[in-house]
Amino acid sequence: MARLFGTDGVRGVANADLTAELALGLSVAAAHVLAEAGTFAGHRPTAVVGRDPRASGEFLEAAVVAGLASAGVDVLRVGVLPTPAVAYLTGALGADLGVMLSASHNAMPDNGIKFFARGGHKLADELEDRIEQVYEQHRTGEPWDRPTGAGVGRVTDYDEGFDKYVAHLIAVLPHRLDGLKVVLDEAHGAASRVSPEAFARAGAEVVTIGADPDGLNINDGCGSTHLGLLKAAVVEHGADLGIAHDGDADRCLAVDAEGNEVDGDQILAVLALAMREAGTLRGNTVVATVMSNLGFKLAMEREGVELVQTAVGDRYVLEAMKERGFGLGGEQSGHVIVLDHATTGDGTLTGLMLASRLAATGRSLAELTGVMQRLPQVLINVPDVDRARVQTSAELSHAVAEAERELGSTGRVLLRPSGTEPLVRVMVEAADIEQARTVAGRLADVVKSVLG
Image 1 (tube, helix red, strand yellow):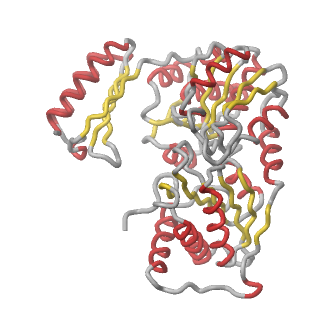
Image 2 (cartoon, helix red, strand yellow):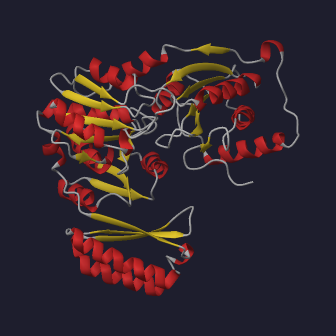
Image 3 (cartoon, rainbow, N blue to C red):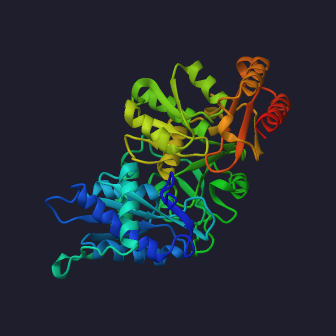
C-alpha cells in the first residue's frame, strides 16, 4: 500500500480517495495507536475535532467523530475553525488528540485529515506510520477491541472554541490596530468568522471579501492563491493593507496600500526586525527554506539577523525551529510560524502581527517591506528526466558552477528534483529579469540534454 500520509496529513478527492470509511478507520486506528503509546494512560481520552467549510467536511467530520467515540475517546466538536485554531485548542484544553478536516488551499472537491498530538503539535512520522499499519491490519479483517456501555466516547459541541481562540490572538498581539483600515480576503474558508472578529476586536476598521462560505466556493478565485480581488479592494477602499488567507487559514499573504503583493519572505523580514526590536527573536535568527528569495537573505545579512535555511516545506522549517530553539520561521508561500504563540503556521496571527507593526511604527507596509528588495526569480520545470541524477552528474555540476560565476553575488541557482514527478525544477535569481530568464533557459536545456 502506498503511504497514505503526506507532508500535511492525508489528502485526496473527497468521497473518491478520501472516503467516510477511510476517515472512520484512520480515526479508530489513531485512537488505538495513541493508547498503545501510553498517551491515554490514567485518564479518559479527549479529542478536539474541527473542519473547514467544504461540503464534504460534514460527512467526514461525522465519520471521524464516530470513529473516535467508538474507540472510547470523548470528542469536543468545535465546528468550522482554522487549522491553527484546532491546534491551539488541542493544547489549551489539554486534549490528547486534535483532528482537522481540510485540504488547505486545494480546490473544493479535495479534503484532508490532519492529526495533532497532545499540545497541538504535528503527529510524529513514526506514529503516522503506525496508524497506517494498524488501519490496514483491521481493514483486511482483524477485529477491533471495542469498548461498550459507559466505555464509549461522548460527543459534545464545544461552541466556546471560537471565542477562546480569538481571545488568545488578541492577548498575544504586540500593539493594537486602532486607526488602521484592513481588507481581509478569507477565501470563503475556515477563518471567515474568526479573522474579521479578531481584527475588529484589535481595533481595526475591517472590510471583508471572500467571507461567505457555502460549502462549495472555498478558494474559488479568491484567497492567498488568487490575490487579484484583494488588490482591487485595498485600492478601492483606501485601506492601509490587505490580508489574504487560504482555505484553512494556516498561511497569510498581504497587499500594501498601492495594491502590491507582499509575500511570505517580506512578511518574515518585517516580523524578524520587529521581534528583534522587542527582544523576542530567539537566537537573533529566522528560519526559512532554500526557495526564499535571495533578496531576503541579503536583507537579513545587512540587518545582522542570522538565517537558517531548510528543505522546502513548512514541516522542515518547524523541525529546525524546534531542534535549535528558534522562534520565527516560514515560507515564501505565507506559512509563517511564531512558536511563542502557535505550534503551526497561523495566517490570522501572522496578519495581526504584521498589521500591529504598521500601527506601532506609523509606517506604511511599503516602507516596512522596503527592508528587502525581492530579486527577479525564474522557475522552469523540466519534465521527463532522471531526477535521481541531479546531484551526481558532473556535466550538470559544471553548468551550475558556470551559471553561478556569471550571476555573481546578486544571483543564485537552485536545481531541485520533484518529490513526486519525473521532473527537475530549475530556479534562477538575478538582479535583472532578462539575465535570470537567459540563465534559467540555458540550464533547463542542459538538464534536458544530460538527464533526459
